[in-house]
Image (cartoon, rainbow, N blue to C red; front, top):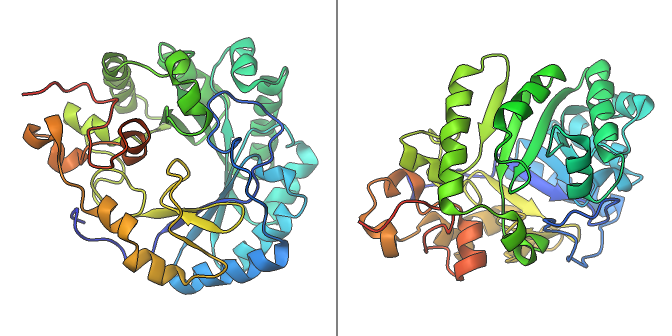
Length: 336
């Protein structure tokens, strides 16, 4: 797929069904969002709408999605209607019984956030004592219930030197996939970026080591979701479908009140799933059109990697420079 084309419908919807959370993470993008929650009946209608649009999978997030007492009913409805159902969770509320209920309600995969192999470091980062122990236990309960698991780590100052330790930790706990998420600068992540974000050179160092590990480790799928790795001569997992950021090209985000945004880290509302036709939003949104037709500016104009990178993460460029088209502030490539 080229930069100027896109799918007829998003493959995946990331749905933040609640902004409530039992943690207090300093990088959270949703904690500052006061949006209300849609009721279950309205959610069912909206799920039918995304299915009619051609969406294949739905990933529940938040906030902590398990704080919705009706999440399993929402998931079961989605699964019965043919959607592949997954979730991102901090794991704190997943015990043996909950894991079995999640399996019965149709969850194909659950991602658990663990940001350090060291319990105290993770607990401090997430703001809850004992959260690491609970997350590790959740992985075991989910595996026992027959649900595929992934481990998600937000890469930042607390863990960027611990690539091999995180990989060993993931392998030891039998997860299918390890997601190294690049630090975003949305919500509290913007407020705390000086304390948590890496410099461009630190990002380069991290990716060089992580990519080498990805090539060497066979018993674990290591996912790197950052388009700027194109400058290292490496293709991303989605490169055969789209170049640059996948937001607005393969996926969309829906907030707790039904507002549609290009991704969870881009707070630009382009419609509402309750009142608008998603197919129309997907095809005619001026914001999505701009994201799909980015124009190189600054150092991107002469960069040999731009055709694959397309300026890097659109969310970061927007948050820190005010323009999708500007170079990703994480990029380490200098002016040529």
